[in-house]
Structures are given as C-alpha cells and as structure tokens.
Length: 77
Image 1 (cartoon, rainbow, N blue to C red):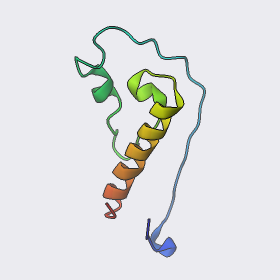
Image 2 (image 1 turned 180 degrees about the vertical axis):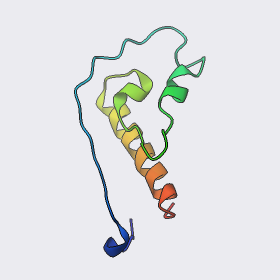
Image 3 (image 1 turned 30 degrees about the vertical axis):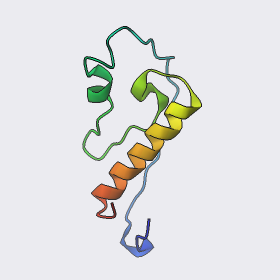
Image 4 (image 1 turned 120 degrees about the horizontal axis):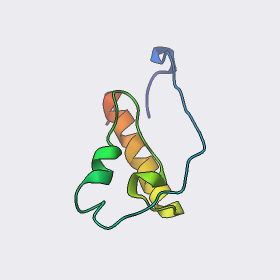
C-alpha cells in the first residue's frame, strides 16, 4: 500500500465461523445487504456474506472493496 511500516501501530485481522447466509427476495433491491456491510467505525467487512452469496467470486470482490476502504482511511486511496 506504500505505507511506511514505522507509522503503523497495529493491524488486526479476525476470522470466525458463521452460518451460511439465507438469501431472501428483495435483500439486494431494498438495500439491506448494502447497509449491513458498510464499515462500522474502523471495521471493514470483506466476506461473501456481504451479498448473501456463498461463492468465491463474492468473497474476492468484497475483500477488494474492504481493502480499498482501508486504503482510503489510511490516506492511500
């Protein structure tokens, strides 16, 4: 990311088990999933559950979006 390592005080990555998302009609259209996956303070969500779609492609896209959000917060995006 082009950040001087001496300026970083802490990075935390968390991984935990979760239930399989249960997609329902209208979750994307009514904005529920978008609201639920927005950053919470300095916590970013990069997982397939963001779109209730348990697939590799959703995981990668959500992880890239979370990384972009973190870069912006760090002033690098």
